[in-house]
Amino acid sequence: MIELRNVSKSFGAVPAVADFSLKIESGAFFVLAGPSGCGKSTVLRMINALIFPDKGQIEVRGQDVRTMEPEKLRRGIGYVIQSAGLFPHWTVADNILAVPRLLKWSPPECAARLDALVGLLRVDPALLNRYPRQLSGGQQQRIGVARALAADPDIVLMDEPFAALDPVSRLVLQDELRGIHARSGKTIVFVTHDMDEAVRLATGMAVMNGGLLIQAGSPASILLAPVDDFVRDFLGAESLQLRLLDLVPVRTLMKPGKKGATETIAAGASLKNALNLMLACRRSSLGVADESGARLGEIHLNDIVARRDGG
Amino acid sequence: MGADRRSLIAALLRLARQPGPWLTVLLLAAMFLMPKAEPLMRWLFPGDPRPVYTRASFFELTLAHAELVAISSLAAAAIGIGVGIFVTRECGREFAAMAGAIAAMAQTFPPVAVLALTIPVLGYGAAPAIAALCLYAIFPIIAATVTGIEAVPATVRDAAMGMGFAPRDVLWRIELPLAFPFILAGLRNAVIINIGTAAIGSAAGALSLGSPIIEGLSASNPAYVLEGASIVALLAMAVDRGFAWLEDFTRPGGPEQPG
Ligand SMILES: Nc1ncnc2c1ncn2[C@@H]1O[C@H](COP(=O)(O)OP(=O)(O)OP(=O)(O)O)[C@@H](O)[C@H]1O
Ligand SMILES: [Mg+2]
Image (cartoon, rainbow over the protein chains, first blue to last red):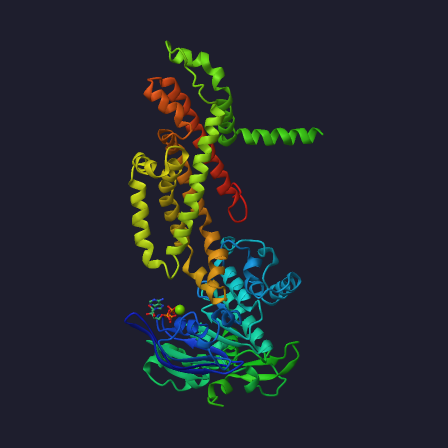
């Protein structure tokens, strides 16, 4: 879907990205992680041809970006920039509909799409006629995401879209985005330097440093086998095991059982959530329930502790 | 009916609290009632046999004055905004410093000198006055246009490009609307300066509110100077209020709500 081959880009004498190769499969939720200034935004901006590489090749949907008309390419790729970047002189509704209007959708199509997006991202409809300056930073970012999804692109580039959100809204939006991704099969390239966010969302991820690709793979494979000390430190070695628990749903360690365990947890929650709940209610086992609350079985602390990774 | 009348009165009261309408009324009064002010002028300037300028009506003078200002300001706006846009494009960036320097030089050139230099080319009358005024107004308009376009946040421009706006769309739909308040402020400056400066157009033979001023100066008749100058001042203040209203009116989301 997206492929970068030996791509290099310098700004003046400063190399921002060096000999960077990466393949992002169609339908992936791909997270680019790395410390500030390592070239994440630059990689993203090369994918939608805002910047052209000095060396190397970039293909989107099998076509070299250099051979495409940049405006046309970009209208087919959703883009959320680091600081929302809403148009201050347009209302929220006009902002959201920017790309559909560039694509000359009819007013009824635009109105229908606006309705759908408001529902999808749970935007408060009262915000639609306001101007960006009348919105909080978090609301602006939510609108930034809505705007990127407006024309229903099959590729969405997101540059730290949730950076300005409080932890709770952040979790909510992460969930919504994961849901949208799961339902739509879009390819999402997501930049963050928050490892918890990376692990929670990614189906594939790459860790960058100083313009270089250090390691790429599934979140689990990177967490389990960091290639060097930089990756280990960046992942936060001290809480590595907890992060791994975040990747595994409760259902995988569930055992049949009906006795005891008054507290229950959803089968889809992570083992980290389960451990947290056990600590909170001082129990070594919990009941497991499905979405409707029907009891499925139980989970034991011993099994979490004894669990071997890589399965 | 009663409610209607009350809201009408409220609206009138609101209007009366603004300086704009008062200035307009004063300006109209000065334009049309100046001949009626002969006793006042006689009292102010005793011993003057003909204390009110009559060679042309003040209405005619004001109209001619406004025409000089309007034509020169429109030309300056077209040139200034055009140059401002050009030097903020990728291809024109290298000309930015030069355009700024030339425009600043034009600004510092005394308008009387511009008149003296253009009269041999354009002849006597309105043309050299318009040329001088135009030259004078370009600089603040270029400066305002460049400031306005450069004040567009990089993130906004980035978002627009990233979503697939063509360069032309970025200019017309993002940069110019966002720069508009700055450009309007620059235009306001230029026009107000021009209203004052246009009086010297009469030195080149153009009809303007400068005509009584210049005649008053050469014939030692201070009454004429006062008459011309007071209308120039009122015109400048009234137009300034007009721009203030326009700035308020064109703000995105309409006029700012008080409080
Ligand atoms: N337009 C530019 N002009 C000059 N240098 C640039 C430009 N854009 C990026 N750089 C430089 O390239 C390097 C990589 O920048 P980039 O924005 O890709 O980093 P990043 O990983 O996105 O960082 P952050 O997490 O802080 O957003 C940095 O050293 C930056 O200073
Ligand atoms: Mg960045």
